[in-house]
Image (cartoon, rainbow, N blue to C red):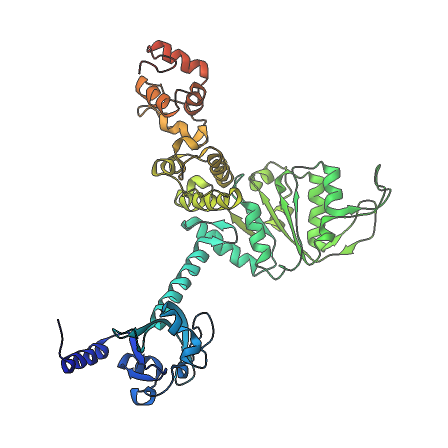
Length: 465
């Protein structure tokens, strides 16, 4: 169908005027011939100012992966015939850069003669503003749910994050209390590396791992000849941590003698090496941690009261994982990401049933146990998602508890429920009739599985099933 040239021109003009995208055309010599209102808004140039000019006036940052060339014939559009949508910048009349997407097409007549070029320009300013707001929201969300390597969105963990932030702004001694595996050392690191001492060293001493004599030498150092085997002078951790932090893990396990020496060191900010009378001025901060109830130890006479109050200037209590269950999905997905990076796998999280088991488990080992459970699952997982039977047996046993069975007390070992024929048959099919794997998943011995199969007349090879 042929259209009247007059009507066609009017239609084209209305179409260009109504478009939200910027559109302009160039003649065969590369000079602007049309310039729609959207281009005026986007560039600051009116149609009267733009028509007759080269497109170089816009100073596009990218034309075929190079800066805007001197002429249309040099830019490569005539040879290429098109520029696919490309994100770049143009220069506004007032000098600021505008982020845009440029799309270019060569126009030829029916005889393949060049008529000109059409360029459409999409303004990304609003989109980039939305993108920046989204990224800022994501950053704030990450800050809310994470402090250093500590992850949590629960109210209890938000209080911990606030405490870390306040502790980092001071030089006070901090006492961190929490069960094993709750992340006490992570909290200590977060405090140190967000404090004014971040450029100084942070040294960790596990007080429960050393005997009294070794711990004394480790903390305070010794001089040559101080005791048998002291063949040279040794600098202790307090001296090594000058201008930094000493993290004393499991402080509740130190002897009364070490307690006394530690008290004097905190009070005087001086260190006396074993076998030496001289005292050395040291600038350090102490962060201590324990899973024990120090107040109870004080009442029993096993921990010095004066040292206790010196240590708990700023106490922080870490909640066990079973009291912050809403953090389990965040933590589990975080560990999945970490182990994907370490192993090169591409596991896409956990199945709904597997996550349900994690939420129901009592987690005596807290976050450390959860991390180990995900690592265990990575060893077994053959699909793209962690399933129930990829999890450790102590977590999976919850799945086989009888509904009528009374709930266990927190921390009590899980007990497998009575195995039914249907349950056993399903597991045999799932495991390809591998009795050892079925036994592992049930948390029972392989002999027990054989006995059940014999009891219910289930063939060992599954041939008649």
